Image 1 (tube, each protein chain N blue to C red):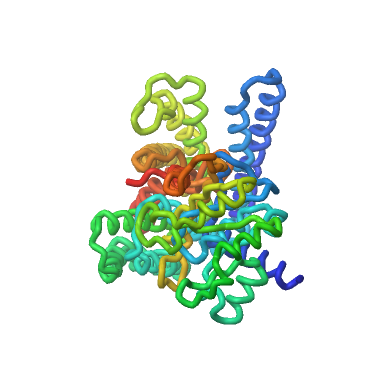
Image 2 (image 1 turned 45 degrees about the vertical axis):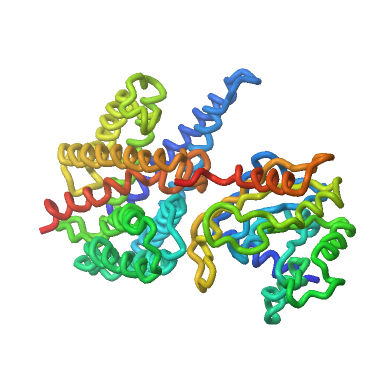
Length: 314
Length: 208
């Protein structure tokens, strides 16, 4: 199969699964006795509906190509940064620094991917934003909780922009024998990690007993974690044919990114819990905010990128 | 007329895009009843946001009370304040003639059946929390017992567009609408103002 045909068959498979999920959701809703509390099922159906939109947008970006993928993830980063900073208490003196975050570092990071400048891409935010933002904030001459504010801004950029930008950066890797197929690596990463979230939710609902970190997230259980990570590792292994990996390599890589994804969700839940909110936002019906949806990708994307770059790029 | 409607739609769409504003009708819901929305004041854009989240039919019935010296400066601003939002523009105390007593202007608008958006702190609050309320709210409540007083907490707009800033930061804003407040028969001015202030403060999210 050529790359286009492979992409089409992958997305056809995903859409078929969504159809199945929608059918199951509709049946559950119909079989429920009238007057029964249906909040759980309504939430499930809202989630499935949102998946249609998200997968649809992803398919559209893939169809446009490299630029579409970069623009889609730039938008996702924008929304994540917005949600993150909205929930942290910046002050008036941070205005200048925030302008730099939103209107300089975010677009530049994605521009560097488009122009294939890996050297600057990999240090722009960890080095240059890290130094420049506190300088801009200090010019606002407000010392109240200064270090805390600077640290939170840096965190927002790292999670929302730097980490996530490693997804479209996969397009820039030069893998021998894999030319023109890099978009499939993104499909592998996104499908594996997102399916891990879905399976953790499903296994957790079905069998969840032992809570892993009740003070952080009451919905994360050991049964959900094991079932979810193992199932989606199997999904990753089954997708080996779209990657440069062989089946057992695909399984190992999938396992690594699934575990990172799980902890990404846990860390960002801890931040939410500290701020006293349940969701980062309300953009995606049934899911919460954008950051609620991509927290796992944010933690797994850089690791996935480095694994591929270290072992598969000469 | 068409230009006003177009400008209104464009301004509301812009405000919603920049702030992703979400209205939480916690203890009241949109209604054609005559109302006075009173909100915390952190930015010149405050009333725009309240106006933008109201259903279109209610927008036409709702007029913001704003400062004349700011909103009459320049043709575009004046057009927006007077024609688009039909603002009740209040001159600053120094240059005020007796006939333009702010209460007279607000009473006139209420007599025409319009709802109002007011900021009882009287000025933009650059810090946290709420400043003490000016007494105007009490006089309005005394004179118009039939009008509903709805507290509206505006979260984050002060950070989107702080004083003196030229470019807004696209942070997410929320508006929280509280329960309608009525003045009690024997309530004194300080008591009512304090109760109104507490009802608004109760809508603010917990701070760190």
